Amino acid sequence: RPPPLFDEDDEADGEDAPAVSCSSHAAPSADLKRVFRDLAKAIHPDLAMDDCARYRRHSLMAEANRAYAEQDEDRLRLILSAWERNADVAADDGEADAGTRIRRRMARIDERLIAVAAELADLRSSAIWRLKGRIDETRAQGWDLFAEMILQVKREISRATMRLASLRRQATR
Image 1 (tube, rainbow, N blue to C red):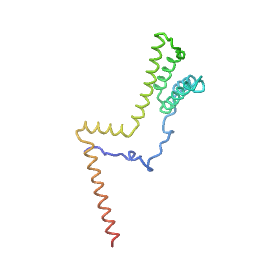
Image 2: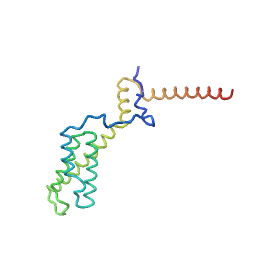
Image 3: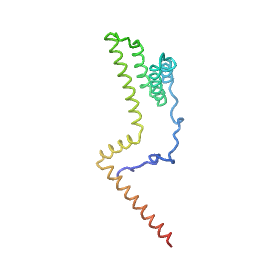
Image 4: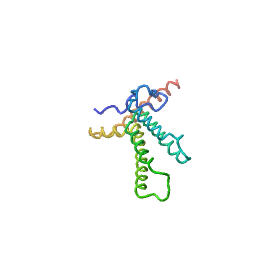
């Protein structure tokens, strides 16, 4: 027999959704706090010299805050590494040597990796990712999840239709 299609907590789409509490997570480690503190000191937007730099620092700080909230020390280290690699590079001077251009390009690639890691983290915490996991599990067990879902919905429609007909009969009496 296939596993149930829906868990109790899968129906957390509406008002009946259980409240998610931050207190259910373990306290951040001292190492995580230290990496975050070092990163915040390096990239804080108040240290920016112009609006462009402020926006970039703000974006990185927002990503660092999300990584800290998710206790993702690796992502914090990646952000810090990308920042440190780019911090060596002076502002665009138009006459950058090859090494400077390469460091800048590597820093942009690192920033893109950070953004992709954030997107992946968001995806992995989504309902669609859980559905994908169930599809993979059921496929490995040799049955079709969608066919089962269709049957379940048809049964629920049938029950609701019978209940509605019953209520209509009671109302006409």
